[in-house]
Amino acid sequence: MSRFKDTGHLLRFAFLFVVAFAIFLVVRHFVVPKSFGEYGHYRGNAIGEIAARPVHFAGHAACETCHADVAAVKQGGKHTGVNCEACHGPLQKHVDAMTVDGAQPFTPPKLDTAVLCVRCHAASAAKPKGFPQVDADQHSGGLACETCHQPHSPAIQAGGAK
Image (cartoon, rainbow, N blue to C red; front, side):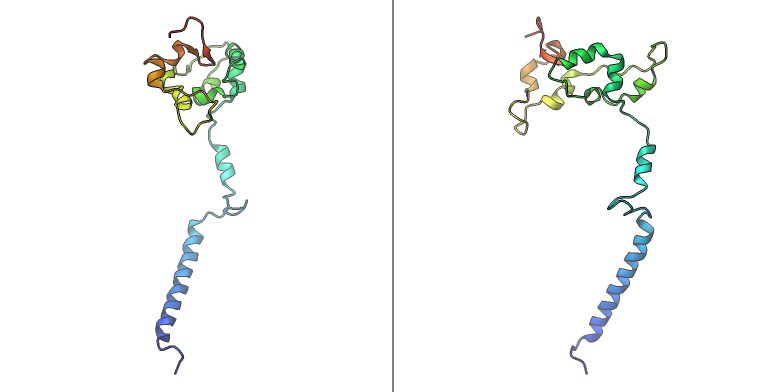
């Protein structure tokens, strides 16, 4: 009668495949956002959603407006290319809280340099050879980094602890 002895099984499998594909298309219609694919493989509405989020980072220019003395020290040191908020964290609240008379109702917390500096300067074979690296336990003997180094210009200070 037919070339395949199990034609019925094959037809049932093909029917199940078509039904599964149809279910997939229906679910995809309800799950995938309407703006998906508007700008390539992205949601078009994502741009507006991201723009509507509150700003957390002020940028180094906002820091240098009030902290010109620190910026001048930083420009002469090894951290000249490191943005302020890479270490100090997002400080848009600090900038927004500034009043016309210079009062500062929001003061950022004091940083623990023993933890902060090691984020970048912990010894690692993956870092370039010229990048300053330390084993924090052996290097400082438990002292905070700022005991010997000024964080904005980290060369050893005269008179620092040894």
